[in-house]
Image (cartoon, rainbow, N blue to C red; front, side, top):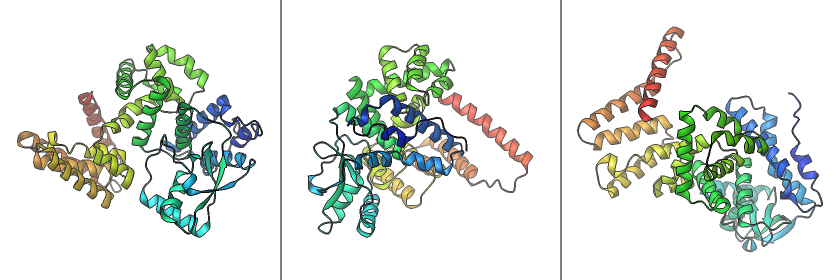
Length: 383
């Protein structure tokens, strides 16, 4: 594997030893962020080596090692304060119980990271497991303290970056985190952010400029600042897009996949956070509403909840979930629309169930050509 010319994570934090300014390494942190984005992109395409994947997950551990030099101390769990600006809101019971079992059997492997005032910066799952499941057997936690006070905006930005770098946020947590950061940093409310992103994406798509925007996601900060001007955005639009790019988020993907989660019904948001329902599944289940089913919302809610339980219990794929939703709509929606929905539902099931292992190459090419042509037709219809 070729030697990387990027600064190492260990080197980045080692150079800050004794300075008590861990979070003022802005340019180096941004280079690391660009590298992380590149690695994530390679992972999507199946090229990311195991050792690089491990290095990506090591980012916070390197910070923790740096902070250990100032000393690990013991703190009672009741003295620790949760971070109300925590971006990651999804802490499933299974996840917390699993951590509790690990701490009970193996001990706390890594200290939690605190901000002045004992506010959690990293390690909320460890703290929750001790507070909720290990009393009174374990009451003390290993901790290290960050040496710098952070403003509300800085705190939210750093926790968002930390969550993104350590483990992918689900789309709901990411959406709310980005909206909160826009409110703190730019004083722009949710609806204005959503509308601005939507109208810019529509303009750039019409001008066939979206590929150029995507290239900026992994570009250095200075290049982002210079290149964003060619898209002819107004001041608010430019500020929002630069904020998204800072967190390595492709605005087109945010518009299509992330921000729609903000409009999910409360029962689906709970299912995402408490039961691990996928965002793509949730967006499909959202269609089981009173308007589409032609029934009262209370009845639609019950149907949606039952469908959600089925998706979770049977571990249905996104395609299977869409088929399930289509079958409900076909059952409840009257008239011609129901018939059409039933036909689409049957088609989805047939395509999903089609086995391609024993089909000849030429037939597969013909099948693929038909599907691609139909996809283009559908996209034109949706636009």
